[in-house]
Image (cartoon, rainbow, N blue to C red; front, side):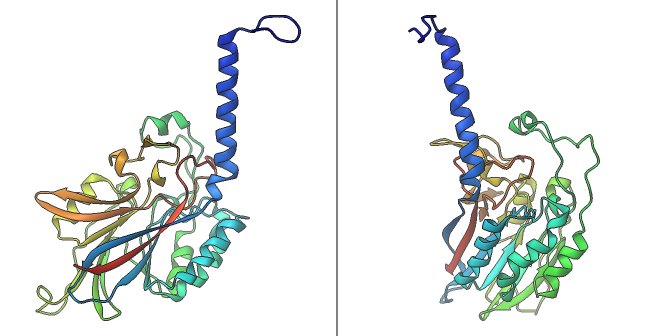
Length: 310
């Protein structure tokens, strides 16, 4: 092979150049196109009491709102057209301390519906720049620089003022569409802040009365999934993984950012522990850290779960 100048081109260097160009193209695609190519995943979960009408849950996670994210904001607002019966937010709502007002504005149409939420680490602290090699090795270490604290109380107050209920290390029952839902949520396990509150106490007939137990966590660490499965949860909802964020087409996620197997980094799967089984929905997330604004083979998503009779 010869260049126009007549000098030979080293095939190895040509190959390296081609790979570099391909890599740059993939990064550009992931940053400019895929991270804003929002998707709605639909799932059907048979967990309701017999003869119950279908019940629709909109699961949001890892919004990671920044300022001036009009496409994301418009898409979030459009989800209200789905008219869900319940909205569940499993945390990591921010990636910029200045984005609380844009977040609340984007979620305003959805907060006309009943909602529950638990926090993730990026509801407490702004993200910090990290070596991406650490993430790819699935290692978790404390940042060298102290992260900036976020105004978590103001954000949560904004949710609460519009009727959404916080489930951080607590439980509560809600009657929705004639169905009793028992919720139990934990603080972010990625920060080791989870404390189990058990299930709500109710009438003396609560053990036999029709109801659905729903557990909420931001990060789907195995210890948390084991606990809720053994506690009799009918459904567990989680986020945190970003679905792997940078995936290989035909293979899937390389990392889960926790101890969850990578093949479970996104989707609806059954979790088994001590002979018991619970369906777990792990959201692939809606946003990214502002320090890694790229997705590849892993579109941002919300999840519409249609709960139906067993």
